[in-house]
Length: 89
Image (tube, rainbow, N blue to C red; front, side, top):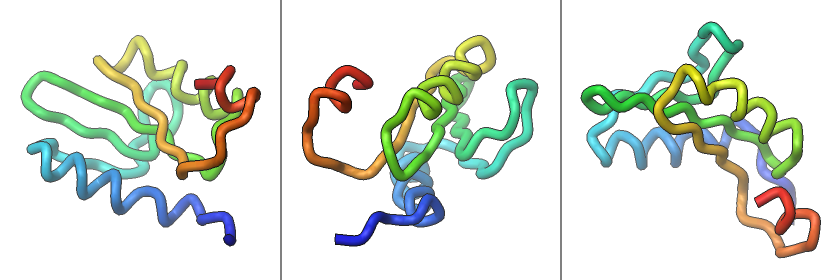
């Protein structure tokens, strides 16, 4: 199985957020850098950082948005369970 590209991760996230009644913006420049996806639903602001693998770098990117967004999510493809993945989750 080939590893997905980061560009393929955005469309399903955008679709899901849209179905949940969020206004969705991609590649948003903000005070903490560039967010992959931003969703706004009324007063609620969520930031989604996407990567092809779960990593500490991804968690750091998400952490930067904690003071800017109400919720911060990370999106990665499903992968087999491992001790390292379990620790990151």
